[in-house]
Length: 404
Image (cartoon, rainbow, N blue to C red; front, side, top):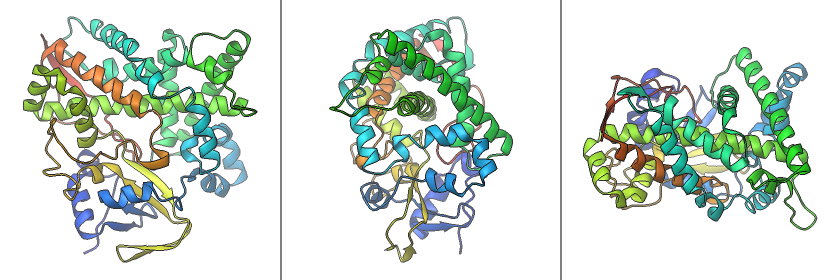
Protein backbone atom coordinates (compact mmCIF):
# COMPACT_ATOMS: atom_id res chain seq x y z
CA UNK A 1 0.00 0.00 0.00
CA UNK A 2 1.30 3.47 -0.89
CA UNK A 3 2.26 5.66 2.05
CA UNK A 4 0.66 9.08 2.03
CA UNK A 5 3.35 11.28 3.57
CA UNK A 6 1.75 14.61 4.47
CA UNK A 7 4.35 16.54 6.47
CA UNK A 8 1.99 19.46 7.10
CA UNK A 9 -0.72 17.28 8.70
CA UNK A 10 -1.18 18.42 12.35
CA UNK A 11 -1.03 14.84 13.62
CA UNK A 12 2.21 14.24 11.73
CA UNK A 13 3.68 17.52 12.98
CA UNK A 14 2.81 16.57 16.56
CA UNK A 15 4.24 13.06 16.28
CA UNK A 16 5.98 12.12 13.01
CA UNK A 17 7.67 9.05 14.49
CA UNK A 18 5.07 6.33 13.72
CA UNK A 19 5.06 7.45 10.08
CA UNK A 20 8.86 7.58 10.04
CA UNK A 21 8.92 4.00 11.33
CA UNK A 22 6.57 2.90 8.56
CA UNK A 23 8.68 4.66 5.93
CA UNK A 24 11.91 3.13 7.31
CA UNK A 25 10.41 -0.38 7.23
CA UNK A 26 8.32 -0.30 4.07
CA UNK A 27 9.71 2.43 1.78
CA UNK A 28 13.08 3.77 2.99
CA UNK A 29 13.61 5.66 -0.27
CA UNK A 30 10.14 7.14 -0.69
CA UNK A 31 8.98 9.30 -3.59
CA UNK A 32 6.67 12.03 -2.25
CA UNK A 33 4.34 13.48 -4.91
CA UNK A 34 3.51 16.32 -2.50
CA UNK A 35 7.14 17.33 -2.08
CA UNK A 36 8.16 16.22 -5.60
CA UNK A 37 11.18 14.79 -3.81
CA UNK A 38 12.71 11.63 -2.45
CA UNK A 39 12.47 11.10 1.30
CA UNK A 40 15.14 9.11 3.18
CA UNK A 41 14.51 7.90 6.73
CA UNK A 42 17.19 5.29 7.61
CA UNK A 43 20.31 6.16 9.60
CA UNK A 44 22.81 4.45 7.29
CA UNK A 45 21.29 5.93 4.12
CA UNK A 46 21.34 9.48 5.48
CA UNK A 47 24.87 9.20 6.86
CA UNK A 48 26.04 7.89 3.48
CA UNK A 49 24.39 10.76 1.57
CA UNK A 50 25.96 13.39 3.84
CA UNK A 51 29.37 12.01 2.84
CA UNK A 52 28.58 11.63 -0.87
CA UNK A 53 30.52 14.28 -2.77
CA UNK A 54 28.35 13.76 -5.85
CA UNK A 55 25.32 15.17 -4.03
CA UNK A 56 24.77 18.92 -4.25
CA UNK A 57 23.76 21.23 -1.40
CA UNK A 58 23.01 24.02 -3.84
CA UNK A 59 19.23 23.76 -3.71
CA UNK A 60 18.42 27.49 -3.78
CA UNK A 61 20.14 28.56 -6.98
CA UNK A 62 18.04 26.27 -9.23
CA UNK A 63 14.92 27.50 -7.44
CA UNK A 64 15.86 31.15 -7.78
CA UNK A 65 16.76 30.62 -11.46
CA UNK A 66 13.29 29.16 -12.11
CA UNK A 67 11.44 32.23 -10.80
CA UNK A 68 9.86 34.67 -13.25
CA UNK A 69 11.69 38.00 -13.36
CA UNK A 70 9.06 39.92 -11.41
CA UNK A 71 8.90 37.29 -8.67
CA UNK A 72 12.70 37.19 -8.40
CA UNK A 73 12.80 40.98 -8.05
CA UNK A 74 10.18 40.72 -5.31
CA UNK A 75 12.63 38.72 -3.15
CA UNK A 76 15.83 40.37 -4.41
CA UNK A 77 17.54 40.55 -1.01
CA UNK A 78 16.67 36.96 -0.16
CA UNK A 79 18.26 35.89 -3.46
CA UNK A 80 21.26 38.17 -2.94
CA UNK A 81 22.24 37.03 0.55
CA UNK A 82 20.96 33.48 0.91
CA UNK A 83 22.77 32.57 -2.31
CA UNK A 84 26.01 33.33 -0.43
CA UNK A 85 25.27 31.12 2.58
CA UNK A 86 27.83 28.34 2.77
CA UNK A 87 25.11 25.82 3.67
CA UNK A 88 23.79 26.19 0.12
CA UNK A 89 27.20 26.00 -1.55
CA UNK A 90 29.22 23.15 -3.07
CA UNK A 91 33.01 22.95 -3.35
CA UNK A 92 35.06 24.90 -4.15
CA UNK A 93 32.86 27.85 -2.97
CA UNK A 94 31.77 26.00 0.18
CA UNK A 95 35.35 25.01 0.97
CA UNK A 96 36.55 28.61 0.65
CA UNK A 97 33.77 30.16 2.75
CA UNK A 98 34.09 27.51 5.45
CA UNK A 99 37.88 27.89 5.54
CA UNK A 100 37.65 31.64 5.97
CA UNK A 101 34.82 31.61 8.52
CA UNK A 102 36.34 28.81 10.59
CA UNK A 103 39.44 30.95 11.19
CA UNK A 104 37.19 33.01 13.48
CA UNK A 105 34.33 30.65 14.38
CA UNK A 106 36.13 27.55 15.67
CA UNK A 107 35.79 25.13 18.57
CA UNK A 108 38.01 27.15 20.92
CA UNK A 109 36.21 30.45 20.28
CA UNK A 110 32.78 28.87 20.66
CA UNK A 111 33.60 26.94 23.82
CA UNK A 112 35.21 30.13 25.13
CA UNK A 113 31.72 31.67 25.18
CA UNK A 114 30.70 29.47 28.14
CA UNK A 115 31.10 32.21 30.82
CA UNK A 116 28.95 34.60 28.79
CA UNK A 117 26.36 31.87 28.16
CA UNK A 118 26.23 31.15 31.89
CA UNK A 119 25.77 34.84 32.66
CA UNK A 120 23.00 35.24 30.06
CA UNK A 121 21.19 32.12 31.30
CA UNK A 122 21.36 33.35 34.92
CA UNK A 123 20.13 36.82 33.88
CA UNK A 124 17.14 35.34 32.04
CA UNK A 125 16.24 33.02 34.92
CA UNK A 126 16.58 35.87 37.42
CA UNK A 127 13.98 37.74 35.38
CA UNK A 128 11.54 34.86 35.96
CA UNK A 129 11.66 35.03 39.77
CA UNK A 130 8.20 34.93 41.27
CA UNK A 131 6.59 33.33 38.20
CA UNK A 132 5.17 29.84 38.65
CA UNK A 133 3.95 29.61 35.05
CA UNK A 134 5.48 31.02 31.86
CA UNK A 135 6.25 30.29 28.20
CA UNK A 136 9.66 28.63 28.31
CA UNK A 137 10.38 29.50 24.66
CA UNK A 138 9.42 33.18 24.85
CA UNK A 139 11.14 33.74 28.20
CA UNK A 140 14.25 31.54 28.00
CA UNK A 141 14.86 29.16 25.07
CA UNK A 142 14.19 31.91 22.50
CA UNK A 143 16.22 34.83 23.84
CA UNK A 144 19.18 32.79 25.19
CA UNK A 145 20.78 31.68 21.90
CA UNK A 146 19.91 34.96 20.19
CA UNK A 147 21.65 36.91 22.96
CA UNK A 148 24.66 34.58 22.75
CA UNK A 149 25.11 35.17 19.00
CA UNK A 150 24.60 38.90 19.49
CA UNK A 151 27.27 38.91 22.20
CA UNK A 152 29.68 37.06 19.90
CA UNK A 153 29.12 39.53 17.09
CA UNK A 154 29.12 42.56 19.38
CA UNK A 155 25.49 43.48 18.72
CA UNK A 156 23.89 45.52 21.56
CA UNK A 157 21.63 43.51 23.87
CA UNK A 158 18.89 46.12 23.57
CA UNK A 159 18.46 45.11 19.91
CA UNK A 160 17.26 41.62 20.94
CA UNK A 161 13.63 42.32 20.06
CA UNK A 162 14.55 43.60 16.61
CA UNK A 163 16.92 40.71 15.83
CA UNK A 164 14.41 38.10 17.00
CA UNK A 165 11.57 39.60 14.99
CA UNK A 166 13.62 39.86 11.80
CA UNK A 167 14.93 36.32 12.19
CA UNK A 168 11.46 34.91 12.76
CA UNK A 169 10.19 36.78 9.69
CA UNK A 170 13.02 35.31 7.60
CA UNK A 171 12.03 31.84 8.81
CA UNK A 172 8.76 32.27 6.90
CA UNK A 173 10.79 31.77 3.72
CA UNK A 174 13.54 29.43 4.90
CA UNK A 175 11.58 27.11 7.16
CA UNK A 176 8.12 26.88 5.60
CA UNK A 177 7.26 24.12 3.18
CA UNK A 178 4.53 26.26 1.66
CA UNK A 179 4.53 30.01 1.84
CA UNK A 180 2.13 32.69 0.64
CA UNK A 181 3.19 35.75 -1.37
CA UNK A 182 2.54 37.82 1.76
CA UNK A 183 5.02 35.73 3.75
CA UNK A 184 7.55 36.14 0.93
CA UNK A 185 7.12 39.90 1.23
CA UNK A 186 7.57 39.73 5.01
CA UNK A 187 10.71 37.60 4.70
CA UNK A 188 12.11 39.88 1.98
CA UNK A 189 11.56 42.98 4.12
CA UNK A 190 13.21 41.28 7.11
CA UNK A 191 16.22 40.17 5.05
CA UNK A 192 16.67 43.68 3.69
CA UNK A 193 16.41 45.22 7.16
CA UNK A 194 18.87 42.76 8.68
CA UNK A 195 21.31 43.27 5.82
CA UNK A 196 21.23 47.05 6.28
CA UNK A 197 21.65 46.62 10.03
CA UNK A 198 24.76 44.47 9.64
CA UNK A 199 26.14 46.65 6.84
CA UNK A 200 26.16 49.57 9.31
CA UNK A 201 27.76 47.37 11.99
CA UNK A 202 30.46 46.26 9.52
CA UNK A 203 31.22 49.85 8.54
CA UNK A 204 31.58 50.78 12.20
CA UNK A 205 34.05 47.88 12.77
CA UNK A 206 36.10 48.98 9.76
CA UNK A 207 36.43 52.45 11.21
CA UNK A 208 37.01 51.28 14.78
CA UNK A 209 37.62 47.55 15.47
CA UNK A 210 36.33 46.11 18.74
CA UNK A 211 36.96 42.93 20.72
CA UNK A 212 34.21 40.95 18.99
CA UNK A 213 33.83 38.34 16.30
CA UNK A 214 32.38 40.79 13.78
CA UNK A 215 35.59 42.84 13.91
CA UNK A 216 37.58 39.65 13.36
CA UNK A 217 35.48 38.73 10.33
CA UNK A 218 35.76 42.24 8.88
CA UNK A 219 39.57 42.27 9.19
CA UNK A 220 40.03 38.59 8.33
CA UNK A 221 42.69 37.84 5.69
CA UNK A 222 43.89 34.50 4.36
CA UNK A 223 46.73 35.47 2.07
CA UNK A 224 45.06 37.55 -0.61
CA UNK A 225 41.62 36.18 0.16
CA UNK A 226 38.95 37.74 2.37
CA UNK A 227 35.19 37.92 2.67
CA UNK A 228 33.55 40.41 0.32
CA UNK A 229 31.11 43.00 1.64
CA UNK A 230 28.09 40.91 0.63
CA UNK A 231 29.72 37.75 2.01
CA UNK A 232 30.28 39.50 5.34
CA UNK A 233 26.64 40.59 5.48
CA UNK A 234 25.42 37.13 4.44
CA UNK A 235 27.65 35.44 7.05
CA UNK A 236 26.35 37.70 9.83
CA UNK A 237 22.76 36.95 8.83
CA UNK A 238 23.51 33.22 8.69
CA UNK A 239 25.22 33.21 12.10
CA UNK A 240 22.35 35.06 13.75
CA UNK A 241 19.58 33.13 12.02
CA UNK A 242 20.96 29.59 12.05
CA UNK A 243 22.78 30.14 15.34
CA UNK A 244 19.64 30.81 17.32
CA UNK A 245 16.63 29.35 15.50
CA UNK A 246 17.85 25.76 15.81
CA UNK A 247 19.31 26.19 19.30
CA UNK A 248 16.01 27.59 20.54
CA UNK A 249 14.39 24.37 19.30
CA UNK A 250 17.18 22.28 20.84
CA UNK A 251 16.66 23.74 24.32
CA UNK A 252 12.84 23.72 24.16
CA UNK A 253 12.58 20.24 22.62
CA UNK A 254 15.10 18.98 25.16
CA UNK A 255 13.07 20.25 28.09
CA UNK A 256 9.92 18.71 26.61
CA UNK A 257 11.69 15.34 26.34
CA UNK A 258 12.82 15.61 29.96
CA UNK A 259 9.27 16.42 31.06
CA UNK A 260 8.04 13.37 29.14
CA UNK A 261 10.62 11.22 30.93
CA UNK A 262 10.62 12.65 34.46
CA UNK A 263 12.87 9.88 35.75
CA UNK A 264 15.62 11.07 33.39
CA UNK A 265 15.01 14.65 34.50
CA UNK A 266 15.44 13.66 38.15
CA UNK A 267 18.58 11.71 37.29
CA UNK A 268 20.13 14.68 35.50
CA UNK A 269 19.16 17.11 38.27
CA UNK A 270 20.77 14.83 40.85
CA UNK A 271 23.95 14.21 38.84
CA UNK A 272 25.11 17.16 36.70
CA UNK A 273 28.14 15.10 35.60
CA UNK A 274 25.73 13.42 33.17
CA UNK A 275 25.12 16.74 31.38
CA UNK A 276 27.32 16.21 28.31
CA UNK A 277 25.87 12.76 27.60
CA UNK A 278 22.36 14.04 28.32
CA UNK A 279 22.71 16.87 25.80
CA UNK A 280 23.70 14.40 23.06
CA UNK A 281 20.75 12.18 23.91
CA UNK A 282 18.35 15.13 23.93
CA UNK A 283 19.68 16.19 20.51
CA UNK A 284 19.06 12.64 19.26
CA UNK A 285 15.66 12.09 20.84
CA UNK A 286 13.91 15.25 19.57
CA UNK A 287 16.43 17.11 17.43
CA UNK A 288 15.89 20.74 16.36
CA UNK A 289 16.33 20.16 12.61
CA UNK A 290 13.70 18.33 10.64
CA UNK A 291 15.54 17.74 7.39
CA UNK A 292 18.54 18.52 5.25
CA UNK A 293 18.19 18.67 1.48
CA UNK A 294 20.46 17.52 -1.33
CA UNK A 295 20.16 17.59 -5.12
CA UNK A 296 21.08 14.42 -7.01
CA UNK A 297 23.92 14.97 -9.46
CA UNK A 298 24.66 11.42 -10.59
CA UNK A 299 22.02 8.82 -11.47
CA UNK A 300 22.07 5.89 -9.05
CA UNK A 301 19.93 3.21 -7.45
CA UNK A 302 18.79 3.20 -3.83
CA UNK A 303 16.48 0.54 -2.41
CA UNK A 304 15.38 -0.40 -5.92
CA UNK A 305 14.54 3.19 -6.89
CA UNK A 306 16.34 5.19 -9.59
CA UNK A 307 17.41 8.66 -8.47
CA UNK A 308 18.14 10.95 -11.42
CA UNK A 309 20.17 14.17 -11.77
CA UNK A 310 18.13 17.15 -10.60
CA UNK A 311 15.98 15.12 -8.22
CA UNK A 312 15.59 16.64 -4.77
CA UNK A 313 16.19 14.49 -1.70
CA UNK A 314 15.02 15.15 1.87
CA UNK A 315 17.10 13.52 4.59
CA UNK A 316 14.81 13.22 7.62
CA UNK A 317 17.30 13.63 10.46
CA UNK A 318 14.96 12.79 13.33
CA UNK A 319 13.83 9.65 11.51
CA UNK A 320 17.47 8.56 11.28
CA UNK A 321 18.02 9.38 14.96
CA UNK A 322 15.17 7.02 15.93
CA UNK A 323 16.18 4.16 13.61
CA UNK A 324 16.17 0.90 15.62
CA UNK A 325 18.87 -0.35 13.24
CA UNK A 326 21.17 2.19 14.91
CA UNK A 327 19.74 2.51 18.44
CA UNK A 328 18.10 0.14 20.92
CA UNK A 329 14.67 1.36 22.09
CA UNK A 330 15.10 4.59 20.08
CA UNK A 331 11.84 6.19 21.24
CA UNK A 332 12.99 6.03 24.87
CA UNK A 333 15.05 8.89 26.34
CA UNK A 334 18.14 7.45 28.03
CA UNK A 335 20.60 10.13 29.12
CA UNK A 336 23.26 7.44 29.70
CA UNK A 337 22.80 5.94 26.24
CA UNK A 338 25.83 4.49 24.47
CA UNK A 339 25.56 4.30 20.69
CA UNK A 340 26.54 5.87 17.38
CA UNK A 341 26.73 9.63 17.00
CA UNK A 342 23.39 11.26 16.19
CA UNK A 343 22.95 13.03 12.84
CA UNK A 344 21.23 16.13 14.22
CA UNK A 345 24.05 18.45 13.04
CA UNK A 346 24.48 16.56 9.78
CA UNK A 347 27.73 14.82 8.97
CA UNK A 348 30.72 15.16 6.67
CA UNK A 349 31.84 18.36 4.97
CA UNK A 350 28.52 20.12 5.62
CA UNK A 351 28.26 19.34 9.32
CA UNK A 352 26.89 22.41 11.10
CA UNK A 353 29.73 24.89 11.65
CA UNK A 354 28.25 26.07 14.93
CA UNK A 355 27.60 22.70 16.55
CA UNK A 356 30.18 23.23 19.35
CA UNK A 357 28.31 26.41 20.34
CA UNK A 358 24.90 24.68 20.30
CA UNK A 359 26.31 21.89 22.46
CA UNK A 360 27.81 24.36 24.91
CA UNK A 361 24.54 26.27 25.17
CA UNK A 362 22.70 23.04 25.96
CA UNK A 363 25.36 22.05 28.49
CA UNK A 364 24.80 25.37 30.26
CA UNK A 365 21.02 25.74 29.84
CA UNK A 366 19.72 22.40 31.11
CA UNK A 367 21.65 22.31 34.42
CA UNK A 368 20.83 25.99 35.02
CA UNK A 369 17.10 25.35 34.58
CA UNK A 370 17.06 22.10 36.57
CA UNK A 371 19.00 23.58 39.48
CA UNK A 372 16.71 26.63 39.53
CA UNK A 373 13.46 24.58 39.61
CA UNK A 374 12.66 21.55 41.74
CA UNK A 375 9.68 20.73 39.56
CA UNK A 376 8.88 21.53 35.93
CA UNK A 377 5.82 20.27 34.07
CA UNK A 378 3.88 21.23 30.93
CA UNK A 379 1.13 23.76 31.53
CA UNK A 380 -0.83 22.50 28.50
CA UNK A 381 -1.67 19.00 27.30
CA UNK A 382 -0.66 19.63 23.69
CA UNK A 383 2.05 21.61 21.97
CA UNK A 384 1.70 23.42 18.65
CA UNK A 385 4.57 22.43 16.37
CA UNK A 386 6.04 24.57 13.61
CA UNK A 387 4.73 23.73 10.15
CA UNK A 388 8.19 23.21 8.75
CA UNK A 389 10.29 20.50 7.16
CA UNK A 390 13.53 22.30 8.00
CA UNK A 391 12.91 23.13 11.66
CA UNK A 392 11.58 20.82 14.36
CA UNK A 393 10.25 23.07 17.08
CA UNK A 394 7.23 24.44 18.89
CA UNK A 395 5.55 27.83 18.71
CA UNK A 396 5.32 27.94 22.52
CA UNK A 397 6.03 25.77 25.55
CA UNK A 398 3.98 26.88 28.59
CA UNK A 399 5.37 25.33 31.79
CA UNK A 400 4.52 25.31 35.49
CA UNK A 401 7.44 25.37 37.90
CA UNK A 402 8.29 25.15 41.60
CA UNK A 403 11.54 26.87 42.57
CA UNK A 404 14.25 24.78 44.20
